Length: 203
Image (cartoon, rainbow, N blue to C red; front, side, top):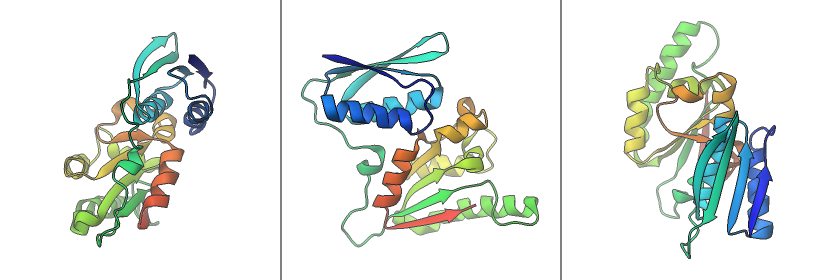
């Protein structure tokens, strides 16, 4: 039996939470979700994919229509945060939450240089660097003009989870300019901070 979820007009993370509640309470084989922005479409699609659904996206006017069908007996996958959750071994897992495009107050130019230097240097954390999550103005560091775009792509290629807040991208009208990492929502961010051994906030 297919369910319909109308999440239009809702802000992050409400669309994902609404779909999550529907799946957990009704366990539908199919679900159709309506959202009204790209960030919500990406977040809901990724969430449904993590639960074993195959998702097809289409547009009706300004709305996004997500048609999802549960794939056979395929095991339910973990969420983005859970896929690379901290292990019980000796290596700590560090989450870096980047809340701006500069470090400190005072000279903005100096703050920007410090942020670039920081993001280029955190590779020294080695295997302990687990996730980089960009929120608020920090999402500008994931777009086409970012001075650390090459470094962030390298981190991602080496297994670090790189995520940018979808609500923040929408706010700054930057959704189409993001060039690295996935689009995330507050549910994923909360889960990731809970799973991390250490959270560092910078910005």
